[in-house]
Structures are given as structure tokens and as C-alpha cells.
Amino acid sequence: MGVDHESFSEIPGGSITLRDARTDGAREVRLQPFAIRATPVLLAEFARAADATDITASPLAPAHAVTWFAAVGWCNDASVAAGLTEAYSIDGRAVTWDPGSDGYRLPTEAEWEFACRAGTATPTYGPLDEIAWSAADGIDGPRDVALKLPNDFGLYDTIGNIWEWCWDYADTARYGDYRALRGGGWADQAWSCRASVRRGSAPDAVLEDVGFRVARGAVGERGAVEAQGWSAAADRQRADIRGPLPIGWTPLRELLG
Image (tube, rainbow, N blue to C red; front, side, top):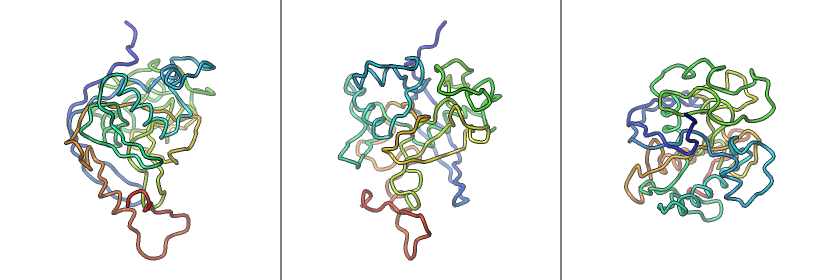
């Protein structure tokens, strides 16, 4: 039987410890049950939404070179098409998530890592060569999704193939409005293809090895400002740096208020 590339896995609630290498900190997150797609969004789906006709890669490859802004826009468009409530309010560079929406959205980092691990505590949920496309495969671009083994939640390609955008800011103290990326890509070495590794980039950056996977469903009250390990108040607190700034730090203050 073939893989249903647009299917969702129902992820049970549970707890996960998120670690921050920069601050050497850790926090425990309690998650409500949620649904997440078995594969990343496909190139054909993304191109169809953008009215693109020239698809040079396989339509079953994951959409890649996708900005964070394009990903959240795709989520809203897909929600409208499915008769669901849009997850995001978008005003220029300011994007607000309503956790009470039943529409499509990017997972939080806590959701992403919990879903990727699927109950495991090891760096990957299986031998890397069996579950992920990485530098060890010597390839020059993304491969069709679901060609390697899934995890125990039925998710494919969470490790390797492409990095995946998450909802969260990467670090509002140091990197401004950069958003978090997870999972590793086809050209990454083993140390980058692990469930806990995080990376960040500007939300309008076009990166060849970056795409996205979507979650769906309400995980909080309508209008809530925290859910699934994310908190607007925590974002503001981290950005509230007092005194001289270390070189290269760009605290995010303008968008957070």
C-alpha cells in the first residue's frame, strides 16, 4: 500500500524537555494532543497554490526554498480551502497565531520534537541511513518524501531531507525575528540530523534546504497567547535585554511591543 502523503497522525499528549545550548538551560513542556502531517508539504502542493507551472524537481519532493512567511501564508490558504478557521493574522511582518483555530499551522518546536522523537530518547529514532537523507547519501537535492522508514508515530522525513520551519522565534534576545528550524537537510552531517538540533533563520530568507510540515487543530482557547511550549510573554521577556549588548545581538523589540 502506498503512503498517503496528505495524511495526518494524531499525536497523544505528553511531556518533553527542551534544551537551549546558548543559555545552557532546559524547560519541561506539557503538550495537549495534536495532529501533524505524516510528510512535509510537497513541492506539487506548494507550486499549485502559487500557480507555478514549472516544476523541475519531482512533485513528490518536499517543497523547499520556502520562506517562513510563505509557509504561514500557505497554511492560511489551505485552511480557507478546507473550510477551516485561519490560524494566522498577518499584517506585514507581524504574524499572530490563534491557538484556538482549527486551521493548518506550523508546529511549535515542542510539538515538532515530541512528534519527531515518537517516544524515543536517542538522537534519532532509528539508524540514520534507514530514516534520513543526509550528507552520507551523497545527493545534491531533496528526495521524494516517504522513501525511508517512518517513526513510531508514522511520520516520515522529520530527520534529514529538508529543514522544517516551526512557529517559534529562534532567540528573541540574540537573533531578532529569526524563526526556528528543525530536522536537518540532505547535505547535513550526522551531528546536524538529530531530534534536538535547532537552527534559525530570517523569516524572509530563501534557503534551498528549507521547507515545512503542518500541524492542525485547536490546542488552546481562542485568542490565547501561549500554547504547546510557546508563550508571547516569554518572547517579550527574552527580548528585554538591558545594558550594553554583546556584538551581533539584535533583540526583537519592535514587533513584540
